[in-house]
Length: 85
Image (cartoon, rainbow, N blue to C red; front, top):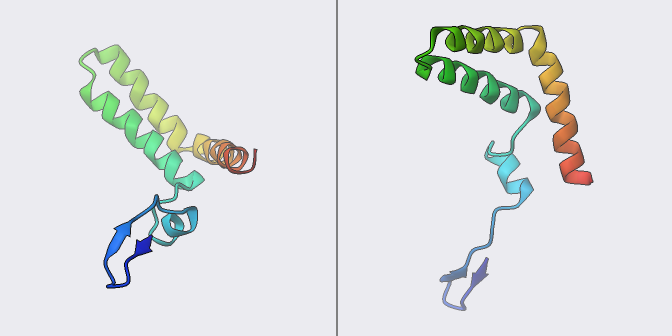
């Protein structure tokens, strides 16, 4: 952010990782797992084919159960590798 001598803001840059973590906008492994589960449930809600709808529901249930821990671990690794190479 750059301010003029009169206190007006001229330029605002992209939010930093620190700023995003402070306001809760930084993804966590848990929040990403929850978003995937929600997306599977949303897809099932909008699927007209009953067979596909059932598969999507079962996938959401599997991920929400024991699979959530695995998904959380995997997303943590992806986030860490993305941040630190």
